[in-house]
Structures are given as C-alpha cells and as structure tokens.
Image 1 (cartoon, protein in one colour):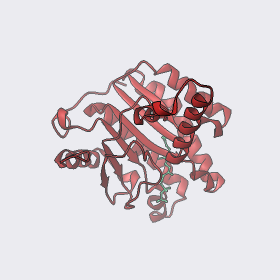
Image 2 (cartoon, rainbow, N blue to C red):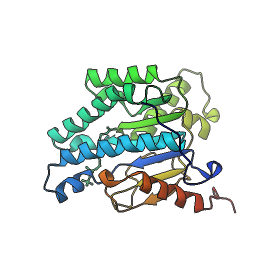
Image 3 (tube, rainbow, N blue to C red):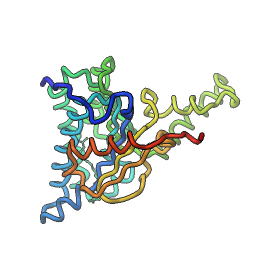
Image 4 (cartoon, rainbow, N blue to C red):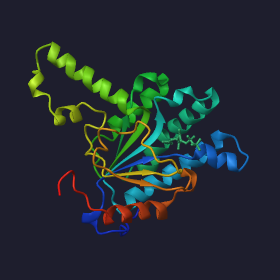
Length: 244
Ligand code: FPP
C-alpha cells in the first residue's frame, strides 16, 4: 500500500517529534451501542490503523500507542483474548500494510507474558523492520511505566554488581537507555481521548515534559481531524522545560 504524504496541520518545525496515545474509551463506545466490550476493541483497532496511516502521511517520526497495560490482565479472559487476537492480527497485517512505508515497529513492554506465537511475531517484526526510519511505532503491550523502570533498575544494578558500571556513572541518559523506549526521544505530546484526565502508568519517565492533550471523544471515534486538532493545540503551547 502506497501512502501519500500530505501537508501536516502545522509547519514541520512545530510538529511534535514523538506522540504518545492512550487509546481509551473502547468499552464505553461498545456499551453505548449495546455491544460486547470486545467489539469496542475491534473498532478501536480500526481507529488505531487509521492513526498509523495518518501519522505516516503527515510525517510524524515517532508514535507510541498504549495497547495493553500490565494491569489489563485483570480483565475477563475473553476480553484479554480478543485484545491479544487483535494485536496478533495487526502484527501479521503490518507486513503488507506498511511493508513499503519504512515503518519500524517495536514492542514496548515485557514480551515474556505473551503466548509463544505472539511473542515470536513481535520478535520477527522488530527484526524485519529494524532498519526502517520513516516512522518508528511503539506498540505498548504488557506495558507499565513502573514495571519498565523496575526492569531498567535491575539491568543497571546487574552492571554495578559485575563491576562494569560505577554508581556515580548512573545518569538520566543511562536510565533512558535502559528503558524499552531506548531508541525513541522523550514524548512531546501525550493524547488521551475518552474523557479521563490521568496518565495511567504510561511512559511516566518519557512524559516528564510532554504537553498533555485530553478530549472527550471515545477512541473508536477518534480520527485524523481530531489528531490534527491535538497537533495544532500542541504547536500553540510554549514549552519551557522548567526554564523561563
Ligand atoms: C482502553 O479502553 C483500551 C484498551 C485497554 C485496549 C486497547 C486495544 C485496542 C485499541 C485494540 C488492539 C490494539 C492494537 C495495537 C491493534 P477501555 O476498554 O478501558 O475503555 P473504557 O474506559 O470505555 O472501558
């Protein structure tokens, strides 16, 4: 599939480099229509696909989607299964869908908890797309920000223990390089549709200076126009990073 580039909603130098998206509201979208929650996720996966295409066409460099959190395992089995199936389908379809678009896809999360087939699909797709640079898409699955920081702390502690690292050499940059997002810059813009105003254990370290954008639209209804609206709002903000 050849995706045509289009003019972004703001000048390129005002675009966020890394956009992170919390895809919230699938369950409510389904409930409002008297449908099972899992059909909300089916619609959510369609919205996700459209946003990937839109990110490519307006030239976003990095995007991360919250697909499944470390806490989402507590949901009913059939809902968990349907989200896993949608992810598995996305990993298969991504090859044909974005094969020519130079999209790098990376898993942000702990791969160990997935069934062997899904785990292997993530590994294969990461390997096959590792040299692509047009868009880097992070799929946050079995992801929790605190869990990610614990992983990083353990990896660093092991290096200190075996003598390859001195405690005084631990810097913010070193911690960043031990997170799942090691190949991505910090988040510039965090978008949360669905009406809730919280971060929900998502990219806490990486969002330290992110601009936050909340809207009431439920994720399955979130479209390119809404995405552009968030980018226009981002470009209007003055970012000071703690300075004046
Ligand atoms: C949050 O909405 C959404 C999720 C926990 C799952 C998101 C999954 C997808 C969009 C589909 C699969 C992903 C990919 C990458 C293909 P919610 O269920 O908490 O909604 P609610 O707040 O209305 O209950």
